[in-house]
Image (tube, rainbow, N blue to C red; front, side, top):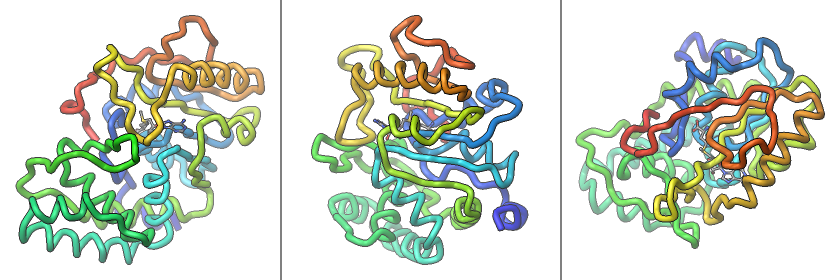
Length: 269
Ligand SMILES: C[S@@+](CC[C@H](N)C(=O)[O-])C[C@H]1O[C@@H](n2cnc3c(N)ncnc32)[C@H](O)[C@@H]1O
């Protein structure tokens, strides 16, 4: 089924712009993938740049994907299960946005829809129309990014949404909302786990860790270092991007030192 969708609709790509998204680094990540592995786990999923890259090259790949952001995970599940209704809802946003972009954007941003379809369509709409495609919430979990400057944003990317739905619905991808630590009980010897945690701030004032109302802390980093050791000793293959800031804390199977442009303006999602 997924291959059928792929052939008809083109390869699925990330459906959200995400701070720290790895589309621009795919070739480096690709070079560092092991030749063979069992299941693929991505516990800091975000836009899933590497996930979609892997699924493109390996149809039928078993995957376990997860993230702590419940709105994001709801979007993956809704796209998998209800893509037709979602596209209809997005088309309605698109129409109303074009009538009066500014007031419509803020009315949607201030709203709190109840249904999974409306919540996901709100997330995708805001992601396409907000400043810099940034997802950021305040300490109460409320989305707080201002309107972006676009003349004609692509609010309904129906072809990609249907391609994503096909590949996620093929029955080999498990989707969960959970803390990264839970991957330890799932991953087995020979499986690949790719960690792409939130950046550590370059300074006390330069922090961007607001993917959820709960910040990613130094304690989380220490937990991650320990987790990498445990997975390594289980015989899992571990791939890591973004600095851990604790030199020599562990030796993952393949360690990447990536230089990222931190400015959100340079994101290429
Ligand atoms: C740098 S982004 C991942 C970007 C992704 N690789 C991409 O290509 O778009 C980090 C992700 O970690 C998630 N996150 C933050 N704290 C987490 C936690 N404790 N457990 C799991 N996910 C977490 C955030 O919601 C965010 O989506």
